[in-house]
Image (cartoon, rainbow, N blue to C red):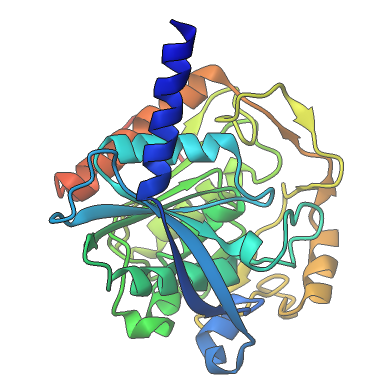
Length: 338
């Protein structure tokens, strides 16, 4: 019996591998959002790859809705891949963006400069452009999700100045699901708080000290105060730390940042400043390191929370199904007031 089960598992793995395609496209290496918006043509070119996967019952005559996945500072982990497996079981194609491997980087924990969210947002949109040519992809039903650093990618990829600077805004995501993102930048002045009207929903842990929920609630509070339309919402999971959807014990990451008090204004050209008063631009690795010295510590806690993990997977399933498959504008779930 065990041999039969092993054989079936092996057959499933082989079958999935035969459906996977490696997609190669040209991107670039902008360090900052400013370089994406104001100087994209002059950035160093970068070849990027990703793995396109399809449901097990793939039909070559069909176009599939797409979910682009973006990993965090530790690159791809087993819990990320479980989300992608779930999406494929629901009938989605998935794209595992390889921003780290493409740049020969395995981790940015402790530095956050070798691969930046600016690079990964650019990768995401250029991947979308490349996949728009695929005969089995419905590019009008494409969502993006990411974790931690990748969560910031799936959040700020909804900011209109970035969208309009890449592909002239021709390609857009119809859904954004940031999971424990770093909400470190807020558009300022308030008239630059222009986000896509595609649904954006943040999932984050109450006890996250790597990328605290308070920064995300502050961002949403400012958006609400601006009076500008947006479609961003948040769910905060009680007693949950960073990486609550991993199956691991709580662990202190000694070299990681704790970003508790970090919250930087950003103008409509994507330039981050130290504060609204101290208009010192944060536009290089050195300036970023100096800026983090003013607000960040070291040694965040990360690890799984079974209840939050189950809720996160369920929410991800419902969110993508309702937004991309059922074409609903917004779904609701009880959220923590902000």
